[in-house]
Length: 257
Image (cartoon, rainbow, N blue to C red; front, side, top):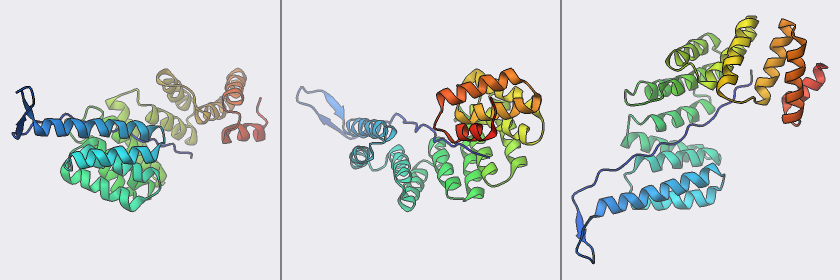
């Protein structure tokens, strides 16, 4: 089964002002720590923007500036962990993730990213435990995301029953989690429950757009259910929108029209 993972968005936080102060040129009192934290947060946000665009050298420069401005700012270490993970330096990535967690042990953003890192490196048990730690944070407003990530990791670890329980739990908390819906559709298809697979896929399409994977899944589901019109519709979309995808090649090999 093709499992698509995706990284979670790094959350930033507001900082509390300390008591150290200095007097500006106009006589107004300004908090040193507040000014420092503003610099750190500004550079962190720039670093994240560069990271999202794949401009890793610029991202690293901004994140290092954020770190020098405030060495105790956990989100900066989180972002550096993600950066080093992206560029294929796992030892450095793990060091930064662990540093972020040591500063802010309950930060669900960092725990999610670290869980993804662990799963990517086949450390499945540690990954699932980390995802559940993220989900169990009572202040986390999207625990279903971490639970769905745990399910994805369980699938990678060839534990479909465990994965299904996670996906169902995620959907109980929020019935519109795309990752849980598409993978429940595929699990249902693999189990021969084709009507259920179709229903999950339809729910998936209510909250997000088709991918090459979802179109190929739709074709296979409708082949089992015998809906030739649906097969043709999915096939046309796959050929037109994702002509170079692996799924389009599989469609051509299958001879489906």
